Length: 415
Image 1: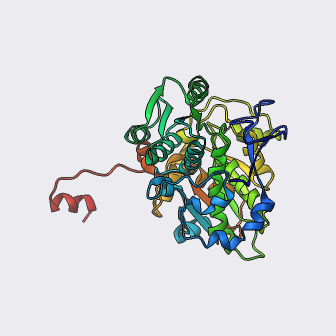
Image 2: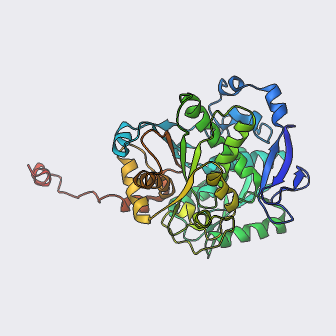
């Protein structure tokens, strides 16, 4: 894609060509923002050229992505994105909101938002002819990479903490990845992955390290723009987007996508972005509350394994996503996360703990008057509840066991 011009360091602002770097800024380790030629894109495309495309997947936005068409027609690589937004009347009534949408990323091929990043990273890997793609993951990013790699015969290696949920590890193995469980947490797996990529020449997908992950995730922002923002009245309040935060790369990607649209003149009004973290994994929220950009590591222990991170690797951009849009950070307890799973389930949406975290944040935002009834709200469910059955079962009462007789049934029903 000739409109892909290179990178800009998010910390020092230094610009690099696409050939100069692969991962982070050599001066300060800052995350790299992909630079696109917005003027050239505007010359070639109008809004209608994008939203009238037949392709429902994230590849409908290929003109706004820094990769070439990866091929893989008829495979899961071409099916990521295009996830639905629901507007449950019962939930709107319960929360007292006039406009509420739940974007269900559990409908992706490997059942999480991370398919977006992995699709674009695999496309980049094919473009640069990398033989092996490697990543560290608590489960979702690895499953996404394993799935997208398997779809096109790309070899993948996944490092995951030994504590990763069994369902997520099963996905990795079934998709044919080389899976290595690390006797440590996500952060130790992350560091080992970088060392391995440098030693063996593997292409590293690590979240908040590879700049193409945010480029994949920004397509979630594009879809919210197309599914919700374009349909709001011109005099509407700014939309409010609620997203759970771990490493910070999803919220950064959403923000990047919206900024891209703004640069193109296609975004009428920038939404307010709210980052939601567990109280037990709140390094980025702590930085936001402190009013600076200094990310201080913590010891994360939250039930929401997908967002359990000691040292967020995309923390600064994640702080800016809320600060620059008039949003905020909110922390919630693990108990509130579990409650959220049950509440979303009652309207037919099965969320893993990280997805429920965003919903729990909305509940708290309403309670604390950060949100009012007229605010259009989008909550991103980042992953399907089948990813973590153990946590789901904590949200509900166990099913009763009765004898297979009408007498036992009548007794149970109190008839």
